[in-house]
Image (cartoon, rainbow, N blue to C red; front, side):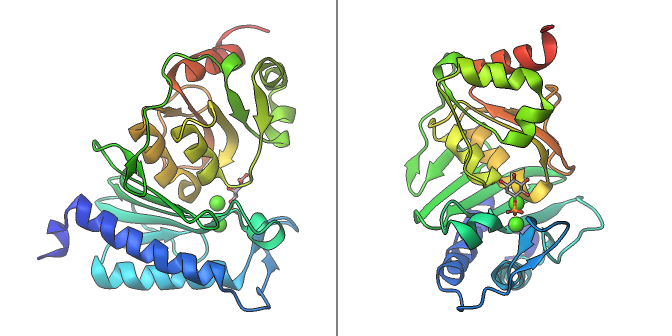
Length: 261
Ligand code: IPD
Ligand code: CA
Ligand code: CA
């Protein structure tokens, strides 16, 4: 078997095994997490983020040989062909402070398009996965298709104070919705939409590793994932995201961007 001939199913299984091993690392840290700050005092990285990235990078290099974009230490020269995209811990603040709602997110992209996705909700012990064109799963269970009909008034919406401050019309949408939530892991927040527990996720500043896997899982569950202005999601670039059930997507996008106040 050549590396090029690995099927999406084989690659999903390789990704799940690597992520499951990494979950054990995340759940059994040394007493000193080795916390340091990156761009500001709330932008954290721990020694566990770095170890998970190194461990997964090693397994993927051995088993597939494809290039890897990893948040902490792996950059890319190009998204051409098959490329892995890894967030070793999405929700590092939660990992350090709340000890829940953090994820390991791994996607395989072909020419920049996610085709295999695995996200672990580490503390819940849930593994979400998807292969392009084959639906999305939680473990072995298919994720039910998201509700295509409900509007945002009938849905919980996930977003953050930064978005509410930056988008004045978002506050009114949240007041009209069933309620506002925030968990602190963009990958898990998009999975909430895919799993039909929330109608929309709005974020202005996501990076490729935050959204590569979650975008595919949400789309495969029937969700719509675009930039906030409605343009197609291109996970190669940092930017905004509106991930939502189809009607919620249309109505939120309309209220936020299209209609005047
Ligand atoms: C962060 C989380 C957070 C989101 C930030 C991300 P990290 O990822 O997903 O919810 O608001 O924009 O950077 O730094 O914990 O991997
Ligand atoms: Ca992240
Ligand atoms: Ca991270």
